Length: 401
Ligand code: NAP
Ligand code: MG
Image (cartoon, rainbow, N blue to C red; front, side, top):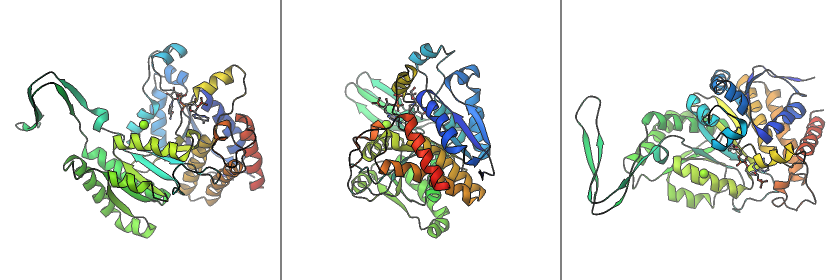
């Protein structure tokens, strides 16, 4: 008998090798066991092109409405892709569109396995990075200063005279940059961080440099403190702590920390440290990602892209060995969240069993090629894309029987 899932999940299909994996996961791991309604949106590049990207916008609204979505990796087209697929234009990044509509924050979490030792010896539990995805360096304006002169910051209110601040008196050529953020965006970032910390029952760190940036970074610190105060009781009941740290202190401490924390970062810090954490934990194929909106909608996906090189091999009819673990965990994450929101423990249990089946294989050295050099003891061989999923399906079926 299949397990009943009460409410639908928004399913966002994608491109290339991950689209191939996606179909296998659905067919072999999910649908045989769950009686579930999936609201399907095809975010494959041809359908985005056909609908003038309307399908991406519809999918975002579906996630907001249903509260849970699961997404396959998608191509963000550049000029080369426009030629390759004969597109009308280089459509914007689907993840950017989803983030914009859901006003969401992306959290990246490594999948840990006993047989893969992180590069940092103290890391025993995952370190999750929450990256603020608005403003700062990424929406800055730069100026090449041609020569001597005065640089000023000028703000002109809609209803009043300008406010001016001297930046620097240049004696010769140099460079200049104007950066901004908004209280609204910082507040929704901090809300999403607290929502995620509570959802995952993890301690929360927020780190910045308010000793130097006494207005800009201090604003982030104050907004996080206000949000922490607002949730003081819920956090205490859940046994979760919130800490503000200076960014350099956070970096030093994280290298000696056992993990099990959510580390919230400003945009640039998050860009940099998410890559450090990802490579420290092992492989891109073992990194998941979840987009959380401030009103608590969750969208799960793998952190990697569409694994283009493997797809071209697949098209030539050659065997591939693409790691499906992060994509499987996108499904289990969404299914678990659906079960939690619907208060259906059997659905939550299914998600746990699915993850256990996959982790069990990796721990026994049954892995795809990317993990061969990472797993201890080193496996003698490796699985193909399909055979790994087939073995996971057998193990899962046995566990559920
Ligand atoms: P990628 O898909 O992340 O893959 C880069 C390389 O990393 C692969 O060639 C492979 O290395 C390795 N790799 C990544 N995931 C793997 C997995 N699951 N199993 C085994 N190896 C894995 O990046 P890309 O190929 O440069 O980008 C392809 C497309 O993905 C681009 O069009 C980009 O726009 C898109 N993208 C989408 C998302 C998203 O939707 N979230 C994120 C990033 C990129 P080897 O070749 O050495 O085996
Ligand atoms: Mg980066």
